[in-house]
Length: 108
Image 1 (cartoon, rainbow, N blue to C red):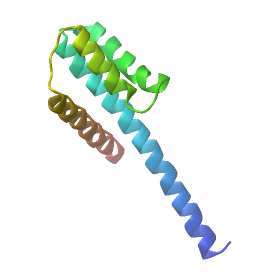
Image 2 (image 1 turned 45 degrees about the horizontal axis):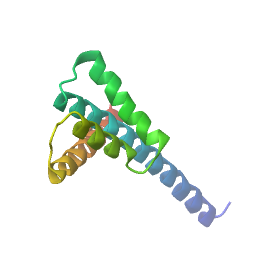
Image 3 (image 1 turned 90 degrees about the vertical axis):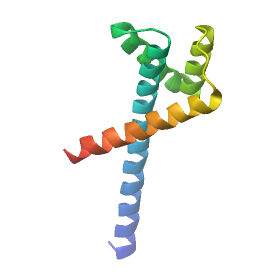
Image 4 (image 1 turned 60 degrees about the horizontal axis):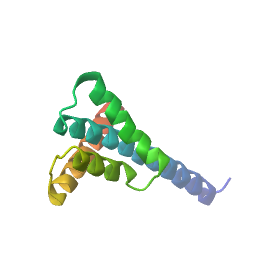
């Protein structure tokens, strides 16, 4: 095995780990966003957790931001008015929090 082969394997391994981490961050972001949205809609307890899981499932059903579209639709249907920029800010906050939580969990 050459140095080039070793570098290629290392690059592929890092790419795989980065993809797995991004997947986990997205799932955690969707869960956190779902819990936040549930709170905005007055949903609490186990019902809030169940709603958050439906948000996570929405991303698996139709990837590419479908979870955020679901939350936006659900908030609108419940009459919860949130400006687009504030909603996007919350999505970003959930993503950042998810990344921080997962990084902290990896360090344990």
